[in-house]
Image 1 (tube, rainbow, N blue to C red):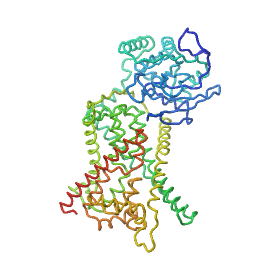
Image 2: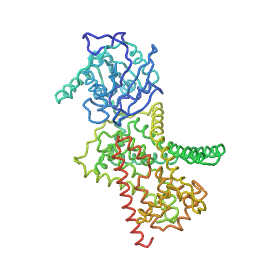
Image 3: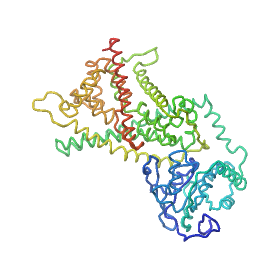
Image 4: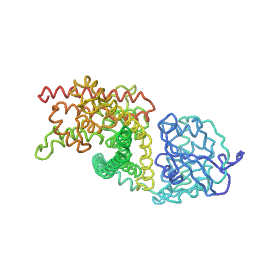
Length: 633
């Protein structure tokens, strides 16, 4: 690139020039913008939310060849400044000066060299803003492989801005861009942005075609490979089969691969707890550290392997270009209940844990669709329910073969998963009926060319997700776990007490009070007490029941000892009622905290908790009464 001031109006009088201290990356989704951001900033980046909204923002710092530090903002992907989603609205506000933050010194428009027909429209819109800008012609390596010839000099001449070739997935692929950041840029002279009319849009499209005709030569059949794959992947029958196999492998990985690291985390938590016991003498401090802090942290981190494995698949499928195709395949099916194909991934994530499922709804542009997906995400059967399901099924469902092939206990477990899915779709259908506009939002999504996932991007993506999970949710769970420890510990049992200590605590008192509420659905005071600490996480109920029944064993041993005990003291109707309770009840405060974070409102948290508890109570009441009438009481 020539050593000259980067200008935004060729030939116009320029204000004093200086090197940029703050740049913003602007581009379409799937243009490689985030990969370029990762290459420029490496580990010198952080993830947060924009003020007042739940759109994710990525900030980083890079160092130029001259040793200057430049602040980089990775703007959310946008197809146009005429925003149709929350992501695009944030991007528009930042580059047009409508946000609370200062405007960038330089706008870097990142484009996909294999798809300039779509990308150049945004470049032309941004050029009208009066900001100093350059165009990063990204994915030039893929363009060459597809036989696409792009004349960067002609592009630069026709656009009136510098055009710099980049390869965001290769080390050194952004060296020319880094060098350009040491070149002085003219001070911005912003022009007020006005939403384009139809004639403006058509004129922009004509200009795009004119520039492409001069600067780009595309061979016939440049997308032949992607088209051949799509003949199978997008086929109504074979495509669904491929999707089913992909999901099966994903679930197998989430529930199988995570066992070793989860067992290691549990062992480390137990070791740390035992170590604290040897260092800190018996008393309240030891109980707080072991039962509150150590157990609380362990209860948070133990889910991290499942979340990272799930996001590994999601990020790999997204980077490869397959995820948008899966959304299209399911769009018609999900449209019958008022959702779009974009809801598929968040609901899929919720089978491991509802927290990443709620977080993944950020990809849904329509707010009503996003809110509906958030509201039904807890109905997907997360892994935290499995300890409770396993305990109750083992205790009350006989282990026998049905039809000579299927295990009865496995059928019951599968039915619980299916019950959750059907219930979620029913709730979505009901929410659709209450909308002012019940028409289905069309699913408009670019289908990028297939490519191999980049390992560097996968690693950075997993690092970001791990940090977000631990930072946003871990502290909340830890705080609430300590609070529940306090409720279960104080006051101490009176002199001569014969029952378990929890019976005389605040939690025990709450359980006794809740018994009057839960008696109509078959719950005794022991179950009611277990529901209180179980609010931190569903699987805590197994250990809580062990404490209530004065068992000395914990963890898996507690479950083993509990099974015959509750089988002898509970009725089958009570067990079935409790199983149904865990299908619906939002007994996971961390999920509610995530909903608060993603919606920026306590209102939706109370709505979710209220309707799920109501559904749980009604379903349990029906289940218990029917079971009693059939002689299972």
